[in-house]
Image 1 (cartoon, rainbow, N blue to C red):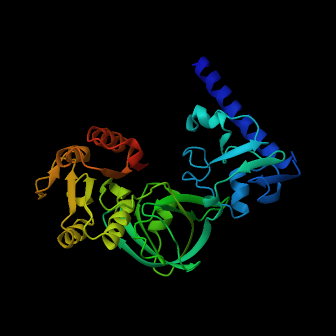
Image 2 (image 1 turned 90 degrees about the vertical axis):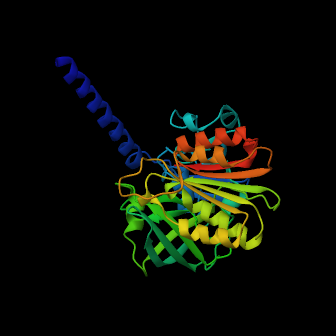
Image 3 (image 1 turned 30 degrees about the vertical axis):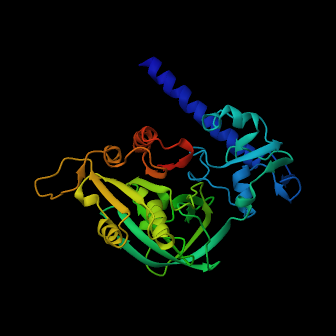
Length: 363
């Protein structure tokens, strides 16, 4: 018992000391005004030292992607720091490859500005804007998923690629909180942004979004994301999702059939029970208009006594394996939890789809 109390006391003391050091650095240590040089003089800034590179960039309306809101848990805020960033921290190494470390890639949320700092940021990110929008409608899709349609106010249009995402700004008493959500509306609706949002217990952004009402104002930045749809209509598209991983799939599919009515495309979507099914009727109607569009939903849990279901059962990768033949030139887009992504990727590899033609978002 004495040993246990000693360990607890030491842990509490260490935590308190770390917190004290952070407060002391913020309020007692002054780094003065530092130079922030972006892209070799393309965008020179003078900024107050002591804050993270990510928060400083946001203050200057340079919006680097950060799905976790700067907590160092997503690894999305990678930029190149050529000088002035200090040594790579242990909090960064899990998200950086050896090649990235050798190339001076850093996590912007973990780099503190303590001296003049020189960075390189892709031009695409320098063009990211903050948008103001108005909630046009809110619809319940399931017991914990809502569809939220936003009408853009300023700027009035958003140009994006199928499968990209935005970062919603959620209210916060401290620094702004941003969370990533895929755009579910197609690219031919540039003045709208539709989101499919699952309520996460205790989630700052999902709780905020689920509380929205028609007429509310929402701010977000974007677009972000690496999804790039092959423009060759002879290439078959495979979309695989689960839960709120529907959003980018809906964007991709409706964009495809607006531009290429005869293109071949598969949608595989996994749900737990019939209560988790949404958009199925919409996609079945779309399939009637476009015979080369194939829709497969699968339920992973055993059916209850009152449930009626004539579709596929089991995990969604089993349906992918069942329906896709080998030897077809394809591109695939996946969105869902990591186990689903891993299982589906293995199946697609066996079907002969190169890894460069498989894009995925995991959550």
